[in-house]
Image (cartoon, rainbow, N blue to C red; front, side):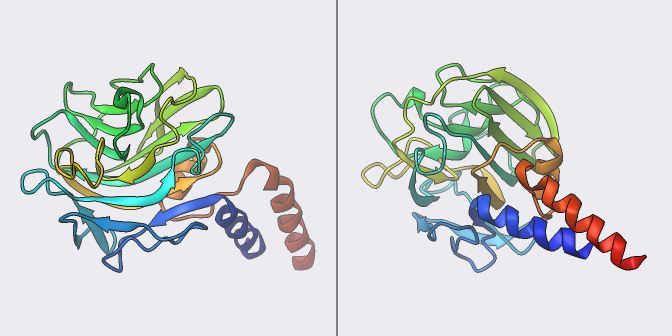
Length: 248
């Protein structure tokens, strides 16, 4: 099992573009891309594991993280696939309905911007947006509880997972605003207009993969495990077989 686990971890790291643990009280990236930038009145407090990003929706309402990359860079654009995920502890409705985990800085036609998170306009409040045909009411994030949320696009379907379980699926198209900068913990924001839509609560262990994970992969990633890509399964099987032969 050790050989398979090590190989799986190496494969997973190759597709992990962004990983903000926030444990250093910053937006250091454990994925393959550069670090993010802390913006506005962002603070870090005790989270699910280590520290977590804390939005300030009920205060200055200017907290978010700049990834430094566009939606195109992160695989949200044409002919791409991705999985974006995070643990959230939502405080509940406050102000406008959008409480986005993944959003974008301002640009023309913001209704077509990336908005993956919580929309506080119904009981089933997890939202998959930015494609012109939004996937609403895709699951529930209960205020005051840690919930793992994931959004995936496989080139055909957009899918939502809550706590590692698929809760919604719908055929989707390309996001119109994919060239705009992606942010974490806000939506429709930029330096000229910093206030308005910070996440109301905590966000922890943010990850973006350049692969479309299935439920098993999402569940493994939510628990910090290795997430092998489909093309690596044969290699993992060979590694396991070799280990069994050595034991014999």
